[in-house]
Length: 373
Image 1 (tube, rainbow, N blue to C red):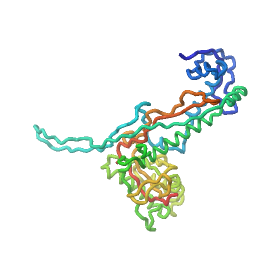
Image 2 (cartoon, rainbow, N blue to C red; image 1 turned 120 degrees about the vertical axis):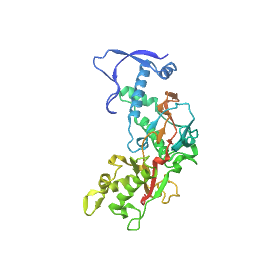
Image 3 (cartoon, rainbow, N blue to C red; image 1 turned 90 degrees about the vertical axis):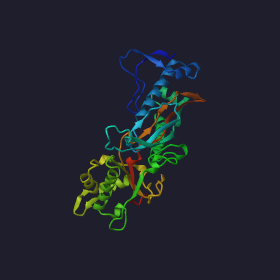
Image 4 (cartoon, rainbow, N blue to C red; image 1 turned 60 degrees about the vertical axis):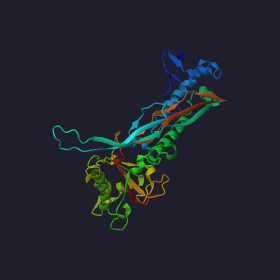
């Protein structure tokens, strides 16, 4: 059972590392403080001399952990582009889902007909592995002693670095999966993964003889984009209405900064496109993704290259959990502190399963808009 002690209330969420995180609140009476089981064990083992040292250390950890959870990573956009599903819990090792198309037929029938055409859901079942992603950070006894003497908070950057490392791995898996670990991404996955069935289209050459946007007129670039949106809408018989485009940072900047034509020098290609298509009306619907620079193959038979050694392209998609979602059955957590040697170690981990691509037809890739990196 956790131990409850009386302590003075403190300001534990200092605005920055130069402020004292243990400053006593003026006029505050003593309050109840619950010492966690792991810190109480360290007190009982003699790692901390008394309850006061344990309380100080626990407050430091709580402050650090809160800061690491609150950090945003605007350059890692995988989570932003797909809904998150956390069902399943820590213990599951496999997630099975069905990637499908709706199909069926309705006919004019007689009043006593018994052979009605069926409207079924046809698809294929896939299993994706749930993998553990883990790392750790720690503090020496000397770091803790110095913090207590000076009243300064422990350095939070260690915890923030481990969280950043976790999110970078998650972001990489969202885009490219991990075929060897049976994790599916948007652009790659194990043999037979739904993402490998997504349609690819090579952009047509412009009047210059090149498909690259920098060699095309503004009108030709806008045609590439509007034709891509119309293609998905028509190919899927109006089932999928595209509402998002993914492309590299460089390609989006080109659309934003390049005049549509000499006749309209103050109107960018981006502005012209947004005002003259029926699906994408806001620049926020065009996501500029660092990881997409030069990853597209130049031919429909090619594969995506996570190292960025190929050409530029863009992906048209329909957002929504029914089409694709990120699966994270057990989000990132800090485990109870452990004392090893002369260091306090905090292990961190989460359980992650990549992307469930339920409807591959809600995605289409278009190749050769730029020469890549």
